[in-house]
Amino acid sequence: MKRPDTFLEPEDAGAIVMSTVRQCDTETVDLTACCGRALAETLPARTEQPRFRKGAVDGYALAEDPGDQPFDVIGSIAAGDRRDPAQPAALKPGTAVRIMTGAVVPPDIALIIRFEFTETVPPAEQVRIVHTDSSSNIAERGENIRLDEPLLTPRRVTPADVGILASQGYARVPVFRRPSVAVFSTGTELVAPDSETLEPWAIHDSNSYQIAALAEEIGANVVNYGILPDDQQQITDAVKAAIDTHDVVVCSGGVSMGDMDFLPTALETLQAEIHFHGLAMKPGRPTLFATSGGTLIFGLPGNPVSTLVQFEMFIAPALAEMQGLTYTPRETSLPLAKPFSRGKTDRHEYLPGYVQDGKIERVTYQGSGHLSALAAAELIFRIDRGVTSVPAGGEVYARYIRPTD
Ligand code: AMP
Ligand code: MG
Image 1 (cartoon, helix red, strand yellow):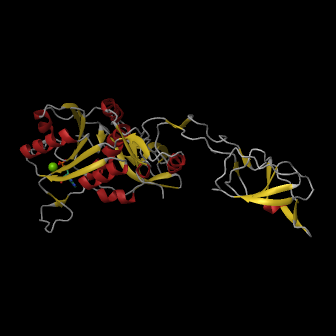
Image 2 (image 1 turned 90 degrees about the vertical axis):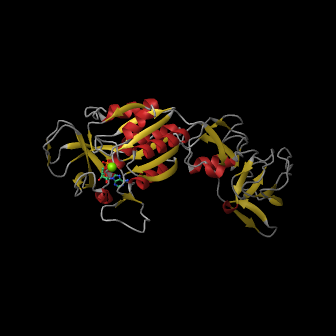
């Protein structure tokens, strides 16, 4: 087997992954299930809004502006009254009706004066305007939305969009299907977090849980198949079954050059097309990416910081694109608080840090096995290939990995 490539740039690797992505097909879901999903087609307006000439305030409806002349009140119209919107009020001069917000406004009503801008005039309980209102307080039919005009175009559905869809009588909504993701951890040393025993040589599987959580956060349907031992046949069989039933397969561990690294051979046996194996980045040098029959297969190195970094760089954008969304990494460029220097410069190095006073501080970090370092990290920052040192105040590329809360 070839050694993993160590020269492929992360950006080039990302472009390779994205060039293989195919959008999922679409499905129709309940209105209550569409928030956060990507709308699959432009939806037209189904009804005009307002559907009828509508009162915008509680007040007195008048056929003409009475100026400071008092008027008599002869009736009342409320929202929900069974009233034909074409039926005139036919008010005699000097009269008005009470009308409530949301009520049908008859065609011969010119304006509504809100109650609080009027006073009652004794002794005949007439009403007079005391403040003028700049608006007629009538919403004309169709002034917000016209029938058949585009209502929403394809994009991520927001809570406001859910309201818009409901207001237009959309109970079912066409969206892109969520990609289905199979997750495996490989390693004979691994046991599940709920295992009763933890032998002295064993460690808990954290990668499958971290990967599943990352994939779910971005909207994928995840099946976590848990742990596979370092066994060529078992790994080959499990990956084959997953390729047949999922859009994406993510394996962690066993992807490098060790005696127990069986994933590359499994993929060769299954005649998957290996697009890259190896990257000029740290962590993540042995990362592998393959496709088979439309399924994307990622082999991530077992070290758990690597899992997060590779997911953020390559898998998150692919999963978003598959469901009709665009992944927008929260990228920035910030100065380092303290000087940085290193010996080897053959790879782009991604390190955890946090921002203080507009500068990146490093968190204590022993390397890509040091998962708990991420608890204090807000971002990962990058020291580029070929760079030995960055002075205090020198700007570096960074990418947030934590919501700002
Ligand atoms: P590997 O890529 O299989 O050589 O594993 C590299 C390192 O990551 C080893 O120390 C493994 O024990 C560790 N590792 C592998 N898989 C996992 C996992 N699922 N969860 C936590 N650590 C892991
Ligand atoms: Mg291993």
